Amino acid sequence: MTTPITPLIAGNWKMNGTNASLAEVRRLSELLTATPPRCTVVICPPATLLAPLNAIAAPSGIVVGGQDCHPMPSGAHTGDVSAQMIADAGAQYVIVGHSERRARYGETDDLVRGKAVAAMTAGLTPIICVGETEAERRDGKAEEIVAGQLANSVPEQIGQLGIVIAYEPVWAIGSGLTPTSDDIAQMHGTIRRLLTERYGEAGARSRILYGGSMKPANAREILDIENVNGGLVGGASLLANDFHAIISAV
Ligand code: 13P
Image (cartoon, rainbow, N blue to C red; front, top):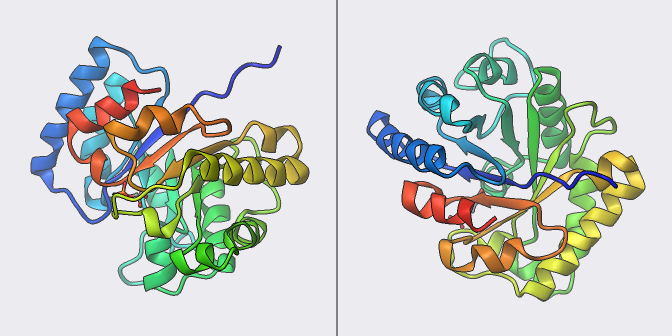
């Protein structure tokens, strides 16, 4: 019998959080120490908080991740942070290709793939985001868009550490809207098929997260869907009690 895939719940704090927010992490650590989670728990804070958050979170098993990285290991790239730097701060994961970066900074699939390769080279597991816009879904193009992003944003070799895919429909992010369970099942099934065709066993075992308005109230229903191996949580990851409720829904 093959071992089941360990689910992953990742919190993406986006551009939120200062040292004061570490109190929420202390609280979450206490909750998780009292009841150990049935999944990997990752928090992706702003880069300024990676090291202090890691120091607080590591004893309770919470893992830290970056929100983005540059494709180069170092150099004259003012304002950027490399995958090596993120790993050096104690992280094990890094989000790449979030739709907010694709849309606002014009990040292409090629650039996202370069970032994912840089992440793996630095010993990080990339969480590669894909997802269609509202107009693309309305036009019946959601699967075509996601398949194209997968084909071009995911590196040819996914190596020992593997990859995590986060399906985040753009229109569901921060909107309180979510796709129907059938629509999530359909898209995650397609992503699983494409990963398995391309990477074999490694694709069959890659974690596919759902992201977009995941909350304590809908987490259980979403996490029960076939081929949903966890969640990438924005707003609801900022407060320990809400994030803990989602973790407990696994
Ligand atoms: P929300 O959970 O706030 O909708 O954000 C989702 C997201 O973008 C996570 O990366």
